[in-house]
Amino acid sequence: MKKILIANRGEIALRVHRACQEMGIRTVAVHSTADASAMHVRLADESVCIGPPSARDSYLNVAAILSAATITGAEGIHPGYGFLSENARFAEMVEAHGLTFIGPTADHIRMMGDKIAAKDAMRRLGVPLVPGSLGALESLDEARTVAEQVMYPVLIKAAAGGGGRGMKVARNADEIEEAWRVARTEAKAAFGDDAVYLEKYLDRPRHIELQILADTHGNVVHFGERDCSLQRRHQKLVEEAGSPVLTAAERDALGAQVTTALKGLGYRNAGTLEFLWQDGQFAFIEMNTRLQVEHPVTEMVCGVDLVREQIRIAAGEALGYGQEDVRFGGHAIECRITAEDPETFAPSPGKVTTFHAPGGLGVRVDSALYSGYSVPPHYDSLVAKLVVHAPTRAQAIARARRALDEMVVDGIKTTIPLHRRIMADPEFQAGDYTIHWLERFVAR
Ligand code: ADP
Image (cartoon, rainbow, N blue to C red; front, side):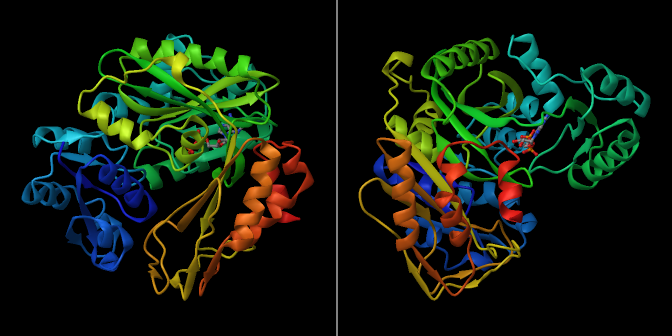
């Protein structure tokens, strides 16, 4: 491929652009009217305005994006994360227009986008699951029956779920009716689909996910795990590679199981399998068929450029290395910095008067900010990812603290002060946390 259109904005559009530049591939940026002066537009070789500020009319506007690709002569489209990245119909239309979709097949996107189908596929491939309903719940009575079988507390989840929406806990039989009703209403409102399923609600799990790459020649390789347990409202805030609790043997065992399963599935390109881990047991919850926000921590410990690999795979190249060639070096931590009040989490868009990125050994900042840039109110609040890499976890934390102290984002509120507090906390430093830890920490 000689030219790629990047169907995204912000830091991830820059991330893809950088990989393309290093591969000698020209880039086409697309942007809304609100993003005319955005960094991804400034850096790309070409840019096309695809609509007004509302994402529905611009970054989700399939016709405008395909037209932009056609008029600029792009050969491939990289969707980044969010927006159209997990839209099977979009992947199909890209291919129908004779372009390469840099991602998995539409069928795999569709399968994993339906969490019930995803769990079913993984169960058949022998991957362990969180106990729960086999398929969608047909009625409240069925929900009650399954809840009694797996034992309360339980979680009712939207089949089409994402972003932590359409998920409700029932602690006992008195709460099941309400959880059933609210989860379905939320699912219908957010996804236009009220299909729900039930899982046992684990009381103190960690969220541990595994990064894989699969080429079109039958090779599947994993790049180890990321621990993403630090979440607020089921949204990740800090991610680490590797997990403070996992041994190399446990990683290898999970990796072998997952790569075998994905070979069975005939999966291609990048993917992440998400698990809950409790008492030494893994239980699959979902698979993301795209690049993840937190992919840089994996890149730092494995020394791999995942976007470059995605593009090579989409072009039909073989990986050219095997599992034994993947090495894990040191520890990496990512802090997601958002334009939000660090205490109330109220959005804080607006003009950035000064932006100064930290630097030095083992520090990486993925951000589309610059001094004088106005963060628009229309999109996701993520404005920077601070990623640090060091030989040990303790050194990585020290490096993160040093880098957070150097970093300046003036004019808007950001979550930098919250990250400073987390990195300074003894429990975090001990690696002693579950998915519920951060909610309590924030409330302190
Ligand atoms: P989404 O697609 O909305 O992000 P996920 O299924 O990935 O939903 O779950 C998001 C988060 O919700 C998980 O990382 C975990 O913190 C929590 N969660 C999901 N399922 C369970 C469960 N069965 N028990 C406890 N927590 C869960």
